[in-house]
Length: 274
Image (tube, rainbow, N blue to C red; front, side, top):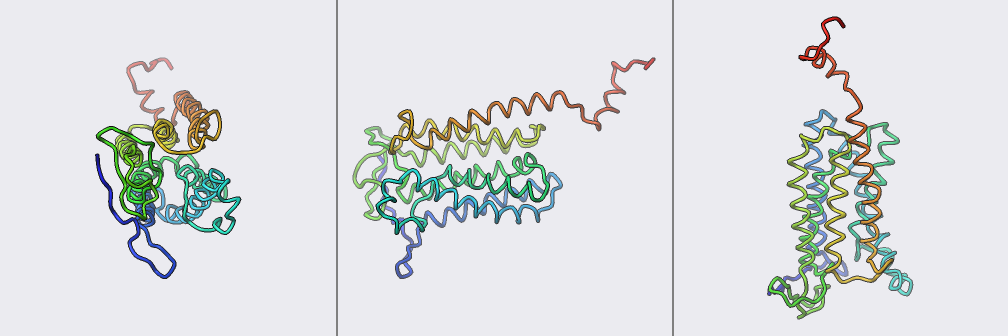
């Protein structure tokens, strides 16, 4: 078993705690922006749009992450209203949904294709999620159920959020490895998937599948149908994203790109009498 005795607090500024988790969140945001800038340049989109959009998505992501966390832990916050406005708890799906809401509003105002921007953001988004899970691992949040396998982790530092001295499933590491593998997959597919929106929807589907499965090994309150809140969101995302992905592929197959017409006409099947 692996013992974690890492102090999740780097230093204190008065009553303010600066945690490794916060540092990893900042690094995750930087990673998302950096990858999006690379992809925007490759696709010929102005990088100013990415910088502009980043501010929208960061604000939307933080608000969404906090809101979903409060809803999930409402029994606690209903009796501790003084804790409502802080950053002690953030939900990953809330961050994703909040950022998506900001993206939708942004593209509507700026009249830019949602699918184009979605594909540009997708690889960096899942890389950012992987980096964020490093913070979860140090922090001790998002911890797993008790485990007697050799892969179990035991948190020993008193400031860790996880139960101390108890062997647990390393669910934070499960999330991190799943998301890192997802980044590699999306990065390799980004030039092959020509259908607009396919990469973006594939990110949502891939992440939801992994998140749904890993939550069976995570500590958490049951929300609906004996599932945790995140698992319910995972299923809703899959119900929407999978049909959308199929529809995007069908629509793309039926649509003939004007730029391909000269190539088609000069092919072996060209009708000489036409």
